[in-house]
Amino acid sequence: MPYYPAAMPENNPAFQMIRYVIIPAAMLVVSCGVLRPVKDSSESHLLDPAVPERAITGSVPAVAIARPSLPGYLDRQQLISRGGHGRVMMNRNHLWAEPLDAGISRVTAANLGRLKNSLNILPVESFVTMDYDMLLEIRVTRFEPDENGALVLECTWKLQPVHGPAADPRPFRTVIAEGGPFAPSGPQHMRVMAMNDALARLAREISRF
Image 1 (cartoon, rainbow, N blue to C red):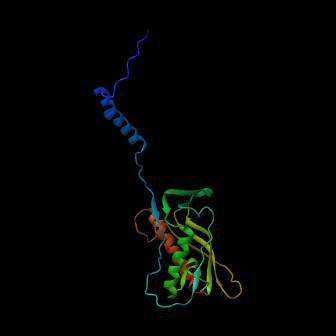
Image 2 (image 1 turned 45 degrees about the vertical axis):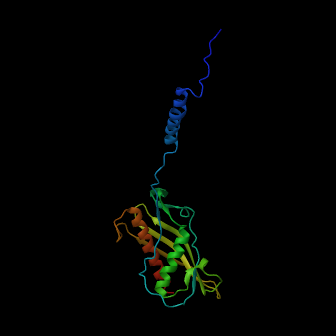
Image 3 (image 1 turned 120 degrees about the vertical axis):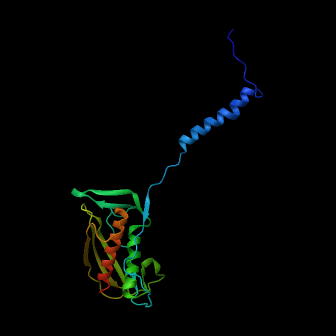
């Protein structure tokens, strides 16, 4: 007749060792392997106004800044660069802290408010009602570094009166060469500063009309 060992009683010292020492230790080893934290190496970036700050006291003109239209490859969280032969490169470790179109309208409103001395130049979402005289519409076609590292902003813009005939769009293009007057804190930070400078140039042109 085959022999089957009897089950180990719970009050057996060997059983207690298995229950309170070996099993928890095994669970700890498994949990350390499965639940080990992963370091997040990504950085988030914001666009900032580059027109010098000033005390704003006026209230005219009243201009709403619409969110600009963006090409699909720019309308994403990752920072984008252009390579040669039509290549587009996404930097997965450098992200926008807000949608890029929202950042452009926010910064353009701040730049124009400083240039025109008006507290009523705001993103369109900031107006409760249509208490503005003109709507600024921007259509971006390029806003990223090219294969040589130069920042390119290409767009059209128009100031559309709320009451009046349709305005004609105006083209705008600016290039900020690689190695411009930017802080030496890394290429992505330099790129964001170049984008800030390009938006300031755009605001200065718009402010003349």
